[in-house]
Image (tube, rainbow, N blue to C red; front, side):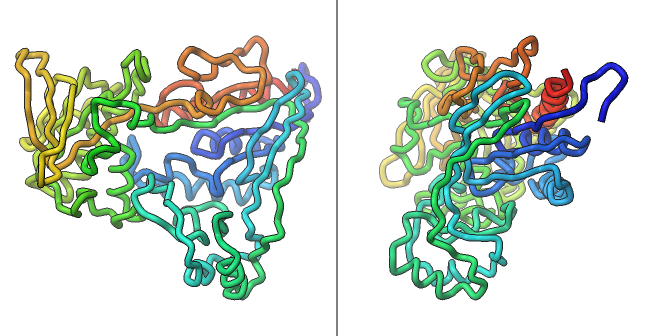
Length: 423
């Protein structure tokens, strides 16, 4: 494939991270004819979007976008997917990289039909990280109902007795405990890092009580509570006693815009809390919702209209002030909070059934920095060096962003990777 003023197309593209940005980058490059290696450290593709009940701007469920992308992925022979795999090192120059990848065994082969018989007989239980530890799951498990590939995983915590039970229960000879960790090299011309984000660790915010009081949860935990495939099958209830909350407060910028934690605005937190208010309103029409904020940021006309709709709700109250301290009411599990209303100057004391911390997004590469010739800003986001080329970042590896912005950015980085190959 050549054009009048370009060199012949050669080389492959690697995409590191199989969330919504990674899927977009991989598909955009593969669908115009390039070989793509898609590397994902989890057992399934989809990333953070799979943990949401709804996402903006249409407030549609994750299946809405992921099913289309998964179909495109299945239909494209140019993409090779490696799950349970991580990049160990990137060596070389633009157009000529050697990437070392480590792959962890799933202990399940392609014979798996997801019949679930292994899960039924398995007795070992592990914390369900997909639900942020709010429940437990079997050590023989399907990551979630939208898992791609649709294939079970055998956790290494499974004991010898359980291993024998699950193997015996499988009628398709799909379970193979002889699988071993492997390391291999791939030659590529460009690498796009779409490693996404992690919710900021709320236990580090001492004054907001997360981890000390049961009825203080994070925004992503609420997202899982509201999801039909979550720990409560979509019912938003208090962790301490399964009570339907009558009063819920949101503490915005929990750890964000704070020089002791994340000094930047995470872009999505305000909108996420507004969305969560609609979840609560749908289940509990009479519940009172209090949103404590520094500034409300809803960029764009659609998002501003969404905010206006919530502002008109007589049971949603916006308080311009940051939650400063919290405590637990003795005997009830209710949460006492103290904040200062910056408009009136008055100190507010309020008791609510549940407090939700709107924690920000921290780039995964700030916690687990890739071994590659990359430039990072002070917060750990990857800075794209287009003059050098070869190594790029898209989505939330590059900056805080919503799904739409991440996808737009991913499409651009797919083009940049292609340009590297065509120099």
